[in-house]
Amino acid sequence: MDSLRTSPNPETSGTPNQVIIDLSTIRHNLNEIRRLAGNARIMAVVKSDAYGHGMVQAAKTLEAAGADHLAVFETGEAIELRDAGCKLPILILMGMQPEATEYSGNKRELEQFEAVVAKKLTPVMYNQEMARRLSDYALSRGAMVPVHIKVDTGMTRLGIPWEQAPSIIKRLSLLKGICIEGMLSHFAVADIPEHPFASQQLERFCNVLQAARQSGLNPRFIHMANSGGILAGLGVNLGMVRPGILLYGSPPGPAWCPATTSFRPAMTFRSKIIQVQTVPKGTAVSYGCTYRTSNQAVIATIPAGYDNGYSRMLSNSGEVLIRGRRVPVIGRICMTLTMLDVTSLDNVSAGEEVILLGRQGEEYISAEEIASKANTINYEVYCKIGKSNPKVYVDMELADLSLS
Ligand SMILES: *Cc1c(COP(=O)(O)O)cnc(C)c1O
Image (cartoon, rainbow, N blue to C red):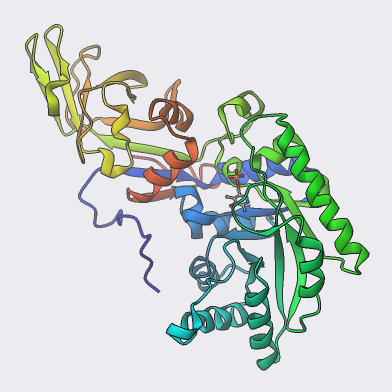
């Protein structure tokens, strides 16, 4: 199956840009999460191409390293994982895509139901009508589909509102073609430690759980803790946790940085210089002439810009690494080109490596640093850079693979 999300092919791409993913760090981060989460099972979130790190490679690494479940956003991703040989249970966070049945004849919905049964996938459920139709379908195939019920405890995004959840869950439990194997909710405030709303949400979820148990339900998998919940120790004792960003080595918010120093970022984004020029004082650089050299300067150009996920917000403010030293981005970042002031380095030449994200020598440019300059979050930095460049995978633990 062709995926629309496929990033440029490293074999055929004519650019020197590479997103390098060290799979051994993902393994390390899984073990760090296990240390924090005690006995809890780990449902590894690999949606959105594993936050730009490559869904199939990340999932296979996590599966081999002992993750218990995988979570993706939609059915297509789950099918791709199964077809790639992943054996773990896969939760579909979006659930089944609802269909305006009168008009479209139910075709998409049926395809999803078929895939769920044939590939043994686990959809999230929050819609009674959908649950009834899935149950009917499963019964017609002599199957029983495991589902996880999503309770909205205050995120106001997806799920059965917590006040209505006990009665609706009771009705869902009567459907013969589905089995309520799990229940989940999601924290709205994961970036701020000790925010009171998190414990309030957890309390609401626990009340729903209690009501479900009183009506005779006993789902095996209860989960609420995302990366923020895991770090805060909130919802960890429910038996399963659902980390995303921590697996890729980053904190769920700047305030968590001190608590996540033992995690290792998996992504490096590198490019190479394609031109170097020496220009006189007063020379304008890039669109809009927003930068002018204050002295004679040496300027290097790299073939990476905002189309490569390197935000235009970093114009005149970003820094990159060459020979382990920081150099500034000057002028506006273009679609596929960015200029650097390399005057501080001796004899820079075309072909030299430039690190836009990641480590080089003793220096490090983090997704958090880029996010703060680009007025966004590390999650978006990873997604955009990961999806816009050819990816290569290394495993620094298993093999001493050269990066050159
Ligand atoms: C993305 C996502 C997660 C993971 O969140 P992180 O903050 O990356 O740990 C967990 N649960 C749900 C429902 C999500 O959508």
